[in-house]
Length: 245
Image (spheres, rainbow, N blue to C red):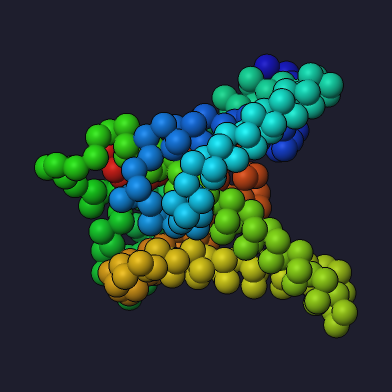
């Protein structure tokens, strides 16, 4: 593969049409295997779907169909290398998931925290419960919805808002750096604490909260440097490895 071909794949990987097309299988996996009793992992979307009922599912399917048609049209018009870019996203996401496991565990050991039950090496197979397909659906939903909410909206949108505010009192470079750093910290804290909703008090234990905060920081850096699709697949792959261990 030539340097120009690699560059072409890299550009296509970050295109919104390719991103949407790459994430579509995960949304379909989630919709195909979702269970309401497992909904707290991506509480916002699932709560809305539970309240609006079938109309919400129909609206989501309609959005997916319209998004798919738009993505296919854009890919055809711009002649984007969507297949190669999607494969690159999938492989890179899996590689990052495999690195995040030992990496986060090692960082946790340097901090005054106990080993977290969320470590990959701490995962244990449950004797009874949801099927492997349900666990994949759980991981897919968590990867897509949590990354859209905490990285896409909280980090990306928060950084833009803070840039607007900081540029009134600082230069562009300083404002950009400060806004990203503050948005990264806040979005990671929101990500960690949000898992404690619906009475899950264990989410606020120091080791669990600290691990999720570190994971949020890692996912945030991946989002900023590698794009939304890669961080979604990294999140999905990590959760899948944990659930199916």
